[in-house]
Length: 426
Image (cartoon, rainbow, N blue to C red; front, top):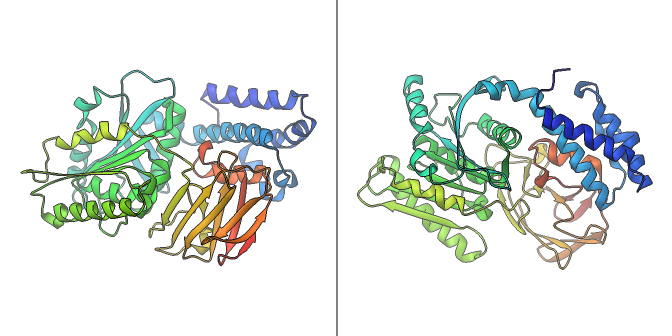
């Protein structure tokens, strides 16, 4: 087993194991955690049985037991991230799936009581030489130092692993963003509800793509001088999005496409006034270089925080597939390019309504901040009731929903699958 280096995380996990194992206030809690979960967590990761095969992981939990299990599983996830990536983080270069991503960060301002902000800033360049992309990376490191001097947060600029034209929206980029966010939370006390994405030129291309397909990770995003290619803005329903392009930036029609996206976002917000917050600025007289007039976007983004469980979600599947999006999910083998799901929950009515679903299977993940899980939950498709039942909270659901993103705010103790918009499977 690797030597664990992050003492705070380790102490927290040990304390939780001790606390929940020794508690005498709830015999069921004592049974579940002392005899089962804490024993499973105490094993080396590669020697743990699959939770899917263990009965205790599927047993019904109370709301208070969910809180305990979530704390334990989150602390364990942090330890695993530290084991896998702390040395890489400390060396300023991450490795994943055969790719390397060097990165630079600087911390500005005093740390707020609710944790730091994180600005992930993507450099330009693209389909050119490694030397040119290195130059763009080095430029991006300090591009917004002046404006960050008046803000608070961690400004982090990664170096793209490749030198291709689509260097910021290839499939591995999503995984690197996920790793960066988790490590910044652990190492720098970043608040996962205050993570912002921005990028210039080819980095802007990446923001057009990554912002909607990873919208459940961002508090807001800002695109500077890029082109969307085949991206769709539909997933931005709950993620404020800024566009900054020079009026004269006509290569690849960046200026025209930016205006078109602005119109599309206007129309989306007109039809859905509670969503699609946006700010589109076409800077008069400016070309591809906007002389830092786009820097106002950082303060604009800083005015927003992520809501990890928005009442309404619009999810359009990109050609880079994702299995989860906020509280929606889809089995990996069922995902198709362009799948669209629109759903909303109503806390007062204790129900979820699937407004639109083009796939054959949809997963609905739920927690106690969304609905009263001690009462029957009503499931509807386009307003028609397809089922009503009390759902089972379980350790397995918590583990599965938290494991990929390592975010307790995207952790859900209940999950049901809807097949063909009519059959409910728990």
